[in-house]
Image 1 (tube, rainbow, N blue to C red):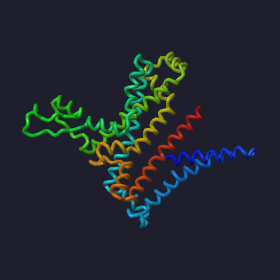
Image 2: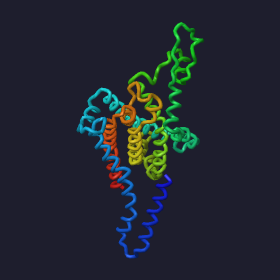
Image 3: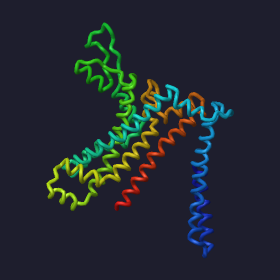
Image 4: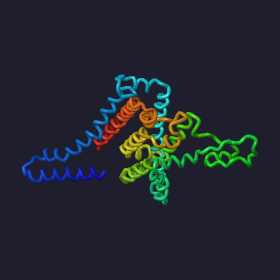
Length: 319
């Protein structure tokens, strides 16, 4: 890190000295001098690794024999990887939609209320916790202690997990939330929604406050009620922010690794693409398959980014 910082300072000093001495340099050439270090950095840090990953995905697990698209066909046809792709699709659909919906409804309900700041802090707090920390918290919430046969109810081991203890208090049986597929995937998704709802609420709350008072007053004079105000005024006015929030959460969800790693280790049919390419590359020692899954993950991100850019351009054209 120290070497990188020193190298950056030296390069920028050289560029500034060259620009300083050449008085008649064109603006385009000056811009080229300043962009050159960034282009080099992107080339070595992003472009080359990307190309090398695609190359490795076409090789066997030893990285020597060319196998073409075999790794991709395996990833799309074998049942193990189909479960991974199914889980990833569930994550990408549910987390952005549910987290954004919760954040939006919460932002509308607490907007300009007496305890607005305190209410928003409660929802935003999970954003300050790392994904690993949040996963450990929820792992305790889902914790399960088996029921001992032949032991009276008052002698049974206490349930550490909050949900299971509540079930016991209500007369029910404790459940193994993280072991039973496919429901365990949804219990993992709850953790991500709990974290991302605060982000959605913060961005959308700021957008709601930016709606001009004239529009709100005109809608009120026209007799719009609460739900109509939300449907015809609030949602259309904050549409660009909604697109940004949904796409940002979707891209973050595609790369989810920490929650799966911490809570289940990818076992019990809970693995996703971002975790599986790590497993294939470093645990199974199959870099060819790991690289193929990384490329698939990259391909899945492209439509989300393209949709985001197109919607933002539409919003700019409307303005």
